[in-house]
Length: 152
Image 1: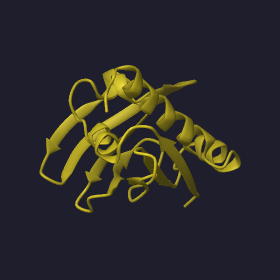
Image 2: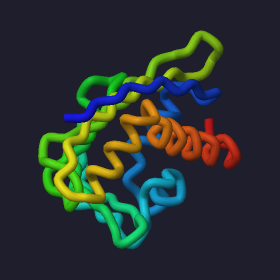
Image 3: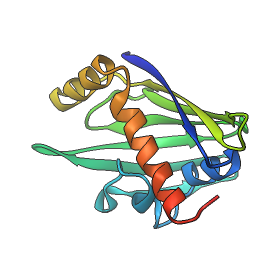
Image 4: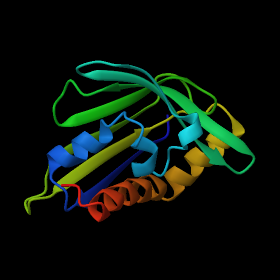
């Protein structure tokens, strides 16, 4: 599995970042740039888990994954692929959210995806070759949207 780790700091407190990652309401695609609203579906949300479908438009089509979100560990949110058209089941992303010492958050993201299609291989190559730049950029954009809306 190609694996990349990135760290992103935010002015938002850890509770706000965690809440945004776990927002499975209709506004989720408005927060996170990697989610195309027509591909977003919520199947089930429990106390420490959710099963959802997320996807995005890419040149030549769409990519999607049915993910199992788990946040039983309070400072970490992990989403694991159950089914996808671009990466293997068991592939995952996790975000460990901790205080950064200045009333904000440090988000340590582990991106660990095994591609199963040409689009998936290209995406994985880009993520690995840039040391996670697209992952960090998408996270930063979502956090900036929250800050701009006065969240946190």
